[in-house]
Image 1 (cartoon, rainbow, N blue to C red):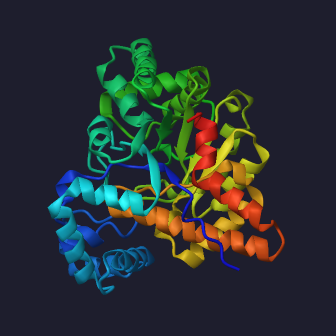
Image 2: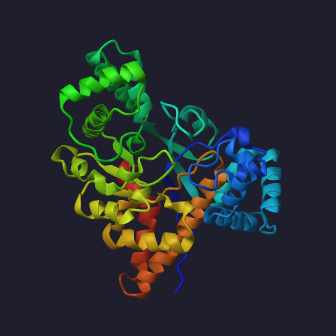
Image 3: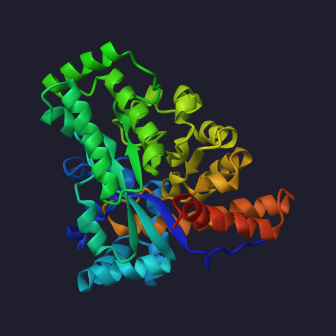
Length: 387
């Protein structure tokens, strides 16, 4: 049987700003987005790297869907020519048309940038600047790590650091942030424990002196502190789980490593979203969403990086465990709006195929499949964030 969810609007629960200075893309700039972490400008000069980026499933899928959207042949050259012609003519209208075609209602925007030098990093665009330029509504997700580093750098001692860090959290919420996000998986990993105060203070001194990434105790400290504060402030907590850029602490990026944090009674009052579902370790994250009443799964990065068959398989595994009321759509789109657009187009198709199989095998009926799709695409976000 076939299901059609195209009429249901999507809210992208995890996205980054696209950039206005990429209105006219070269082929190298375009395909550089299609592998994990993208290609740096230097890497994009190597023809071998470009060949590999062109041959990812993400590249195939986006090129084919853009060709259909533009009404041209599904070749990279023709798609890019059509894309740049539309973009140069009126970039705002082009992004608006993409969001309307994807039936995209709103974006939760992590203005993600790094507080320390890394091999790959999203180019900086402030949330405030992007909010003005975006054709649909946005909500701000405030990144923790830059606030941590700013507080370290400006502080005169540990107590002053804590005061500055707490104040930065308060200021973000007063400014409209609806959630905080951590990328501790890129710093010290997801094996987050409750550190001794002496170890936290030792790490403060080391971080103040060196800006080192290797300060696990104080990073574990700020995760526990912010999670508790989220409950007090009435906002959500997002944490990157699973793979991503090559800088990830791979041995400790599996969401299963979050057991101690999530199982802690002090974190139970905060709604916690496992961003990217822990992909490709998605079943571990889905277990938490089933057994812990405050844990949610976000499908971004798998959508649109994975092939549709691969994403269907993973989504089926997630929904085997996680209630449909705790799963939300996201794209992890960044830099160019086509990724946000493709995430929604591919995401609906993945849900259509997955839930059709559930109906076929009598896991649920057709009405329940439509209800589940509406929850995942936007309903759960509306309910949890009280939109």
